[in-house]
Amino acid sequence: MHFIGYSPTALEPGFDFSDTVLQAAPAEPCLLHPIPRHLTEVHWPELVHAWEAQILQALAQPVQRETQDGVRRVQTLGRVIFDFEPNGEVAAYWWRQNHHDHRFELGRLFDAEVAAQGVPSHSTWLDSLKGEALAALYRRFPERQSDCRNYAAWVGHLMLNTYWGEGTQELVRRQIADALALDGEVLALASQIQLTSMVRTPVRLQDYNQVQRHREHFLTVQCEAPQLLQLFAMLADELVQEDDPSSRGGPIARMKRLLRNQGIRPAMWRLISREGTDWMKPLMGFLDLNEQSMAFAAVDLLSVAQAFGTQALPPEWLIHAFMQLGGSPNRPRAAYAHRLDDLFPLCERMGHLLAQSDDETRALMQEQAAEVFNWGSNHLVDLPARSLRHISLRGLLRRVELEAGKEALALEGAQGWNVAYRLTLTEGRFRPVILDSPQALWLEGKRMHHCASDYMDRCARGQILMVSLRDAAQARPEATMAFDLAGPQVQLMQVSGFANRLVEPIVQWAAQCCLEQLQAQKRAWDLARGAGEFEAGLGDRCKQEPVAPGTVTCDLTRSDSYIETLALRPVPALPGQYELLVQSRLLSARSPKQWNRRHQLIVDRAALLNLRAALDRLLDSPEDNNALPERQDR
Image (cartoon, rainbow, N blue to C red; front, side, top):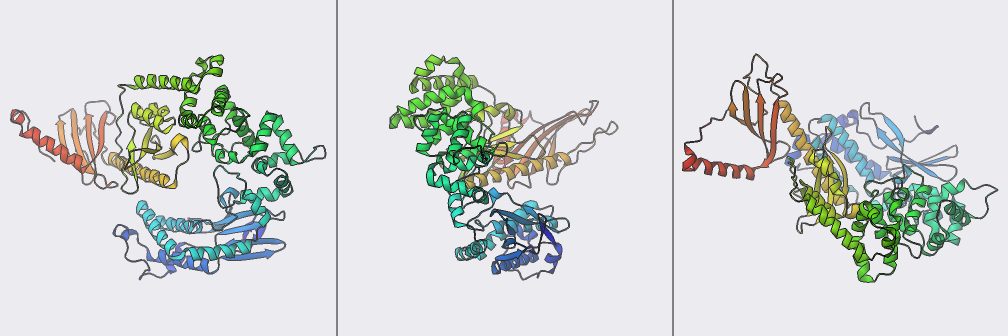
């Protein structure tokens, strides 16, 4: 018996990838043939049969209903249960299987992640089945996790194409919508608001429940001031606290009073009453809604917009260029107004210049706004207030160019840093370029209008690796990736688009491919270091150093007190790549294991051929022929 809250449910999960079920599944012949050659070692026909059977079972009965003691529940595709509460709100729970004892548990889903329309959204239910199948593959092939992921992705793609066509999607979604029977009026209002940091389509349960919770007030706002619907959705929970006999007026009056108490001027209220509040939606990605209330976020956005003046609303690109000084959709912050209020005079001047601009000047402002605010964050204190009130756009841009020239001169001749990692993408339209010098980071920041140059010191110390993802055909930067190298595993810190904007899914995919390559290279190096541990005891100083399989080594220098070796080996995780390692050891040191110098490089076969050609030319040179002693490879 399982429980939702304190209430038991007779509903059962519609999937099971336990060892018992997989052992009972039929074996060969398998539906999926031929198997890709590189995946044959992790091919598991019983798993594929069980996977397929559970998909067919879910599609045959996509809805299960439960009604008892005033409780109404709807389970969809054997995975998610919608629990209808007495006040009309809906909570969603999902089945999860413990991978150790294979028992099932019910977990609460975040309302912001659950679709209220078009259930299931996209192919999420198939993705969850793929995740369970992948966990079973990991149990059986723990040493081949990369192949397991590729195999699960391949099988999942075939299942998607075979069983989740457009006709099937339409039929299943219609059956689920009929079973859920959500309130159409509430859905229509919920479709006009956004309460998450990202635009969500279709409507999410968070939006639906917010409207359902304050339905009467939402209907009033929709009737009296529909342009303020987004703002009211963000303030509604705070306004409820004023819902007592001493509070006067309806929801519109209460909003106005609340905002005035928070420093929003009457002129700004008149402006948003005229222009509306939908402009707030694309900016919510900047806000960390886990660290602040929705009402505080609304006041914060209004305070920032108010800084540009109250004659007209600033365009989204101008607010974006300003707010990216304090955070971004890739690194959302709890608040911006109090962090950046020292730049509000510059915002006011930019708003004034924008109001007086023509189309050409407006385009120039949009292109250079981020540079102007970046300059202001460091140098606005050097500009007197009187000068700021009268400075022109050209004057601001001249100051920006002057400081940029000083920065470029300061970086001229700066030394780069050695990066042993190598990245390549054989699929897609992107080419990763590792940023290995202060000039490269600075130029990337200028091109992409973000703060890549702030990471110079950490990149130089080898703690962070910055990579520019560029269009392979035009060499134009599309995104900048930051990887954390300091921990035991390489981590993807963030992926930033132009001016710190969110990136497309294909860019996220490319970033994940780069992450997997970096992790594979680091694992290979860690294994090589482990295989090459040199146990030089005081009584056995010329002990032969063990090497990894496939390694070719030779001594460059060897004596009773000093050894220098060259090792070359293929990297299994990176086909076509080789590790070139020069290692020195001083055996006469008090602690020989600690006195160790390593120089490591990853190269491809073409680089090795070039090296061999260079050595051949050197050895064939008549003047050096007699000067170079011959060495015998071990």
